[in-house]
Length: 436
Image 1 (cartoon, rainbow, N blue to C red):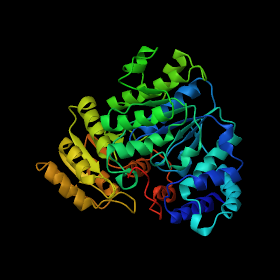
Image 2 (image 1 turned 30 degrees about the horizontal axis):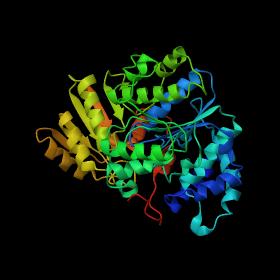
Image 3 (image 1 turned 90 degrees about the horizontal axis):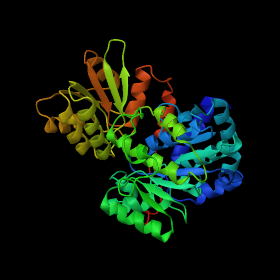
């Protein structure tokens, strides 16, 4: 097998859709030797900020000298981004080997219960991290939490970043229902930390924590922790935006509650946060012609509001052009309402996805939200970038898929076009999650 064949095999697993439930993942992990039992985890769920919080935790623990696995999704360009150790992407050779070793195990499942793409790569990651003897794994949920494939682990701590409306067709139509799914990662007696500030969601998280006898720390409400920076600004954090300050406080609180199990000095924490890197989230690119491009995967309304706040605070005087592409299954009308007033020129584009919202529809919504603006529907991101070549400041946003495509076009990431399609998924026949 060569790498492209391994990717094609993983691509074929998309035919099995996305299923909620842990039975397949537990069975596949058992067939693979239950690698999760050899590892320590911090499990991270939430609507927004999961990836950034994971990146901060990884950077802090790596700065302390640990060998740290990182499992996140989706990937921006290469599938290999999803499975990293000490921020080194899994190699093509290891992807091939793991696919070859898991293929025979998949034959032990009946055709109507075949593991999905995400279930398979979850066990791939577990197997790889165990083989590589990781000291700690930062483990991000894929979708929801309670019935997400990642939820077969028992972590040292559970982290819930926040709760907002997203993926309602899967997780519920209210904040309470969504919180119930996210709170499913809370385990018996295992501490949980959250930055959730929505009262409806907090009620649910607090109830589940009580039922599980899990100590709960709520960022922004509980008393300040030992380190003053944990409840205040982190001046050395390179990621801009107030929401990243909240994510940093969440990461620091997690480190604090695990001090007895994994001691880390204040100096190593500062070094870790000062060197955190997470592409595609308020990532500022300075081009050779002095043009500035801000890349941000604001893919839901809460993310769009965070981007809007960050633009007003960090780039208040900039004359902005906006390049916007959103997935059809997102609340793209409200995303347009939030972001369109921020720019004088707006270029709507299709996302390179089967689920892309129509660029003309986006243009209509943006025009309603900002009538004086020049608004152009483009056939592609490449066309929009040509039309904005003379702009001083361009914001590209609306989807992480779009950000990944931009990183490739701008030459900031190796091209792996065939691998972006692995982010696509569709529903499979399944019961509606409890809490709906």
